[in-house]
Structures are given as C-alpha cells and as structure tokens.
Image (spheres, rainbow, N blue to C red):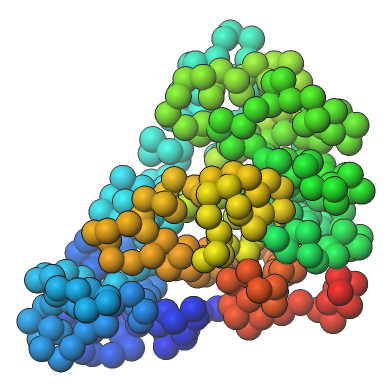
Length: 376
C-alpha cells in the first residue's frame, strides 16, 4: 500500500486519512478538501513538477505557475487525489465517475443503462440480460464472464510493449484486449477471448474484426456509455442483436482519460480473476504526434482530443504530466482493490522505455522470476 511520505513519479503523498506530512501545507490541504470534500477520508498527492512555491507565495496563499509564469492569488498548489469526479471542478482531470456511495444512482450508474435501453429497439438483447450492480461496477450477467473467477487473465493494451514483450508465451487462462488489437500480427497467434471497443469504432461492416471474433469465439463487452451521439448506442445495439451470444456490457466507477485498458483490468479484478497480467499500458511518449503514434495496433491515429486540448495554454502544464498523475491514481486504486480482493497483478511492460508505471509497479507489484524469464 501507499504510505504518507511516499514519492512516485515526482509526486509526494502529503495527506492520508487526516494525517499531514508537513504542517506548512495544512492551509492548502484544507482548501483542497473544501473543493473535494471526499478527499478528507482519502489520500492527497502533491505534484512537485508542475508548480513550486516560494516562501512569500505560500504565506500569501499564492502558488507559482511553472516556467516563471505569473503567480495566481488563491490558487491551490498542484494537489490531486482519487476523489476528483466527473462534472466537478477537476474537469478532464477526474479519476472516477462518482464516489462509491453515489455511483450506482448517479447519471453514470444505473441510469446510464436505462438510457441505453431506451434508445434500443424492443428486441435489444441487453434488455434480456440481468443487470448486476455494485458500488464499483455495473454489468450484465452473461456467459462471457462466468469462468473468470479464480482464473488468470492477460489484459493486452495498445502500447508498444504489446509488440516488444513476449507476453504470448505465458499460459494464462484468458487474453483480453481492446479496439484494433486484431491488426497486430501477434493477435493472429493467440486467441483473444474478450474484447471491448470504444465509441466510433467501426464494428458492423468490419470484415477483419468480425472474422477474428467468429474464428476465436471472442466475446465483445461494450462499455454501456457510448459517448454523446445516439448513433453510437444504435450501433452497439444492432451489433448485440446480430451477435447476442457474444455481446454484453459493463461500466466501471473508475473513469479517467487513460482509456479502455485500465477499465478492462478493473473488470477482470472485480469479476474475481486471481491473477491479472497487464501489457501495453505504457502511456503516450513525448515524441508522439498525430498520425505517427508509438502504438501497437494503429499508429496512424491522432492523439486523443483530451491530450491535445489540456496541453495548451493557459493551463501551464503538459498533458504528459496529467497522464502521469492519472497513472499514479490508477495504481493507488489497484492497491486498494487488492486489499479487498484476492488477486495478483503484474505490469509486463516494466522497463520498456515507454512504460511510465515501471517505478510504481516494481515496488508494489513485483513480477515473479518465473514470469520474467518467460517473457524475455
């Protein structure tokens, strides 16, 4: 677990369950808690890269912008926590849809499934599947999930370590992946048993995707939230009606800008997997540009919209730093889930030059020697 005073990715854990690392930060922590009240019972981190104070600024409640920018009166230090929710003051820097207590009844919880079904026609297969809700996950009771409990799952994301690490040598029970995984030659040599796809992804008339799915009996597990466009819901329902046995949905409380991969990892954990190996959860390198991504599936894509927008003035910070903070909160959440669920987890992309999480996972979730030797 993370402890007060821990430092990861140049972020310092300065508050935890009422305890402060440094009394001089108390005024700033109190102001942060006023903005994010749930953080009072949680952990608060300080980003030591984005902004640094001077003695005068701290005493006057000011915090210097990085790069010598003008100090902003009453601005909070760059603190962050897991209790930054959607449609709150954090904006795109949120880490979860809502708190555990409010998730199921919030607009991101059970009402989201109601919205989806209201858009569908009367014969939608999801209306026939039992919906199960917990304070961390909403999902349909499906044959696609029944064998996960107590088994091992590899979640293969689209980062470059997918191609560069020999994860396919591991004899795990299931392989899960996402989006255009089938475009990587490695996918031809393995059987992906479950995949999820983002809104806007072409699935109905995609012969290569459909052929792979049918050949490998791949289950398609949709996130029930399909963006802002009615057509995304309609496409999902048309696909599910055409392939009902292989279609199901889920929605996690966790929701950051990091993409589908982390949410698949959480799905595997909450469905009871005993061992989860992660590959391709690396992060966007600083060298990436639109149309030339370091991506294992499709490098011709554009950078995510959030990544391009948040890195522009007047925010005075880079999207790369936001990404690092969100990865830190993700692994903090995984550590909390490990206290409540019996599972082991490994970051198979460790030491890859694009793998941002390496220093965190090496310390908290070390890879057994046997697995290290197998994937060399």
